[in-house]
Length: 311
Length: 144
Figure 1 (cartoon, rainbow over the protein chains, first blue to last red):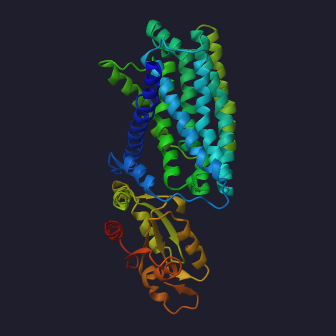
Figure 2 (figure 1 turned 90 degrees about the vertical axis):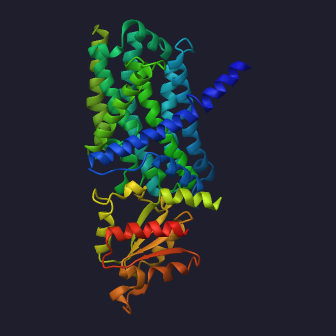
Figure 3 (figure 1 turned 120 degrees about the vertical axis):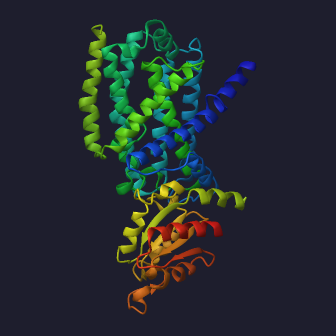
């Protein structure tokens, strides 16, 4: 009984919904602030993402006449629930690597697929041709980046010889971080490129391209439903880099000075993402899929071969 | 409850830009607000691309007969509460296009046809300065 209560607290408060949501919104502020600094602007105040979210919560929710009501309203919650569960799992494995179940990394990989799928669902359900176009682009991009990402993750799994994230974190505590190996640099680089696409940031924000598709799948969303999508995106900003840190960079330790070091690792990844976002133009969907299935997959395969030959 | 909702609205007004037959001069001044010099993102003002996300409609230009049903449709698509900002002399009072054969009326008259309680803010000028627009938005949001 006590056990379940603890898991419930982990899901709702720390490291689940409340913590990841708040932290994610702060990180979207970092994103907007760095973007503003790159463009020689001042940028929004610290509380701006919270204002945006509260405002959206109080606005009217419009159901388009052409929309499939159930799918349209359920889709944002699916993404939010999946991201919250993901954050909870990552947090628990990082706090206590002893906790594990069979193939939890595989479960994490699947859970990471759910937020983009929820966007696709919402886009198709909103009954707008432009949203449907954005949703289909999202689907194509997903097919593109999943292959190299899974190969990069598999490189780590084979190196450690375990499917459990806790085992991977413990391995790094004993043998030093995996980034000490050249093969892991390549796998990390591949997953950073996939991270950019998973967060739907600029070179790969093809599905929600503002100028051509008017935010694509989010076009028909208004008020609270849009707010939930924004919150999910903010939480993705926390969750996906956190997974990469756990895989390659020794995980996060929440004790003493290690908190600062964990935060620095995380911020380094975020700033790289934001800088790449600000210095690149958007690519077309065919260019993106060619890029991911060509060069990036090749790079991931090279990393895998290097790892198998012992580097 | 209404108090609370407008409180957040003041902090993050998202803006959607509708051109209703203007000469593009006001539109250029609107874009000036986003440049480093004025940087409206400081106040949480953001240009959005879908009327469904908008809190403020920036309308520039006298409303021509062609664009009138479109403008009314866009206004219906915006989730309430929302503000309509008439940017420039044409949008406020038809300007030099008064009595023209192709103009249906100023923005407020066109929108009041479908919603008599709509909230308006008038920013005259040909074109208005970016400072004026920022001040107008601030005043309008205090009025709600």
